[in-house]
Image (cartoon, rainbow, N blue to C red):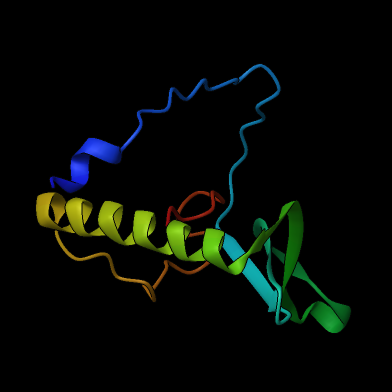
Length: 110
């Protein structure tokens, strides 16, 4: 018996009517035995007390997911990153950035 004979096709309707787009250049995560919490946000350079450089992490979106969903996200990201690197080269995670002011005050792209 062919294993494909018992498979049923399911239609998926994608509703983007309440979708919101955002941008993040950093992420923070926390875990429990049941879930993973991902805070997406933007690191912005700032000055602390006595002109000490610091980074201000502005959280824009929190996503909470169970572990099976996290594993599907991992597989999807792994597939997308592999395809990107095959087309454009290795992505360097810890790039050196120009000194502040060397780029006209704009934040460097990740």
